[in-house]
Image (tube, rainbow, N blue to C red; front, side):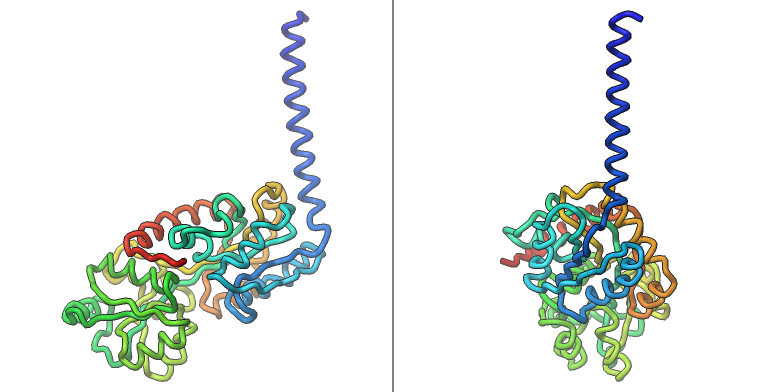
Length: 330
């Protein structure tokens, strides 16, 4: 065997050994994790939908990880306060955060400066759930279907206004997408949350509202509001009787409020994959699925790559809307 062959063989052997050692290290990291309690930052108050989601899957994860989950509610700054904690945590997978549209996909387009870069400082792990908004109108509105409502709205001239649960919210952006797709014109009236926005709609101060269904159900059941459409592509299990915007003449229309788990950039890929696999298993549990459906949620899941691609598409879609409307929050 000449020196050249020996050199090449040695190179191959070194490369193979390196790959073997790297895969062994990754496996060891995944098996060793977690070696202490796992902290989950919820960038919303206790009792919020994000908080409920984490507490619903918590028992299944504790069972798998043999470590407690320490849920920390850190609301503020549209979710950025909590996600900043996650972005700046040690990159070992022991601090997770449940992010959502606002501080992940919307924020970079609405704020001149954020305390973290969602694309560089956070690693997406898995989509936990998503939820459609519903188009609600006053029960006294003559329209019984979305096409009828669009026809009616076009007769209102400059008198049309819509409420939202806050400037820059999914509620706000869903309506802006709807207006762009249907050619309607309306003035935006932002409120501090669902209750005042829904009350305004019922009183006739505004004429339409996109919001999540559970927040509006009391007024629907009280005969003050009615649902005309949902913003998912297919009918949600919890909204079987509410046709989608897409099936009523606005093809491809989709506007979901979503959430998912993130951790700090630099966390070993093997640990991220381990968390992804365990959360996917929890999301497939029949009791967890039943609890989410009861809350009007669409169960998530999928690979790390699936979630990353989903976020990239969502950011591109809503970034265009935010820039067109000129929404700026400083």
